[in-house]
Image (cartoon, rainbow, N blue to C red; front, side):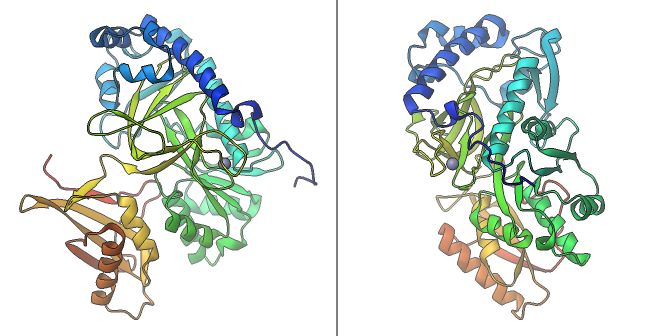
Length: 442
Ligand SMILES: [Zn+2]
């Protein structure tokens, strides 16, 4: 293990610590090329830029990008398979494509994301950079416990191999076999989803294994929020006696677009590959960095399917102040999905607010479910929780605690809190927990 070997601090120092002006100049150069390439080779962009009356030559500064039209998931869906197998957003012939991933389809028809050889090499290099920034080194043993089938997180294991770590391709093995690997091969770093990190730790405990006694010292999580929610992160970190780091990936762009560093304060964007804008989700107007809004991403190098002004649907902030780790790459803080946000009594509520409360209230497990519904022409929400077996509190006391904590954090009480006995709320999942039920009329 390391033998005191000194490794460099950054994976790509000239990018990760570059002054802002250097990054901006590089972004502008790459952006001009990317937009021109898209206009020239993608039927969709040619049509939509023409319709909006903009040309690649209109891009004189980064701010000029605001004149170009947005795309979103819907654009991907309606153009895929149109005209050719790769669809109208694609900008290369199929023979140049070496890899495809698809989205999970959890919010509709799965969308397909193609990569050229150069795109894929860039993707893996960015993963290596992000793994390096959470402290992974060639001396580490790494367990990749993410799905390999079509999922964009699958190839991330190559990022670990590329940086020299010993990589174990666990995938979605049953938890018994993963626990066997943890006990016998003793990986120091594991990558999985936050809900699975929690349930795997619980399963270990039920088998009489204390997760803290295992070798895991760093846990990376992606695929759902959690690691960025302070209370959730603390709970999982305490269960495992390990540090938890959040990864933010979009199959539409790359795998990880951003990841925490060892300071765990926001997620560093790979700014040489992705340009970030923040917009008002209602009006589409660009708002200053640092303000809360919808994050919009533009790929700067991807050729198989350039993504120009992709509305992510994620609400968050993009902060450009340098980080304590020495990196100058801007950081994103995600608050939640625009579609998951609901408004109760004129207050914006995110499921992450409820999660933070659930993890703080005494006497309940970490399981919860939110139900949002319309009643009397207004949106209401109810929260379901589980009382811990050994809690002396009554169900009524538990419900009051949850109501008061939610009122304190969000400003509006839930219409109802339903308390189940421990183990009776069927939200536990191997990979992605379904925690929000939206019954509002659309
Ligand atoms: Zn940092």
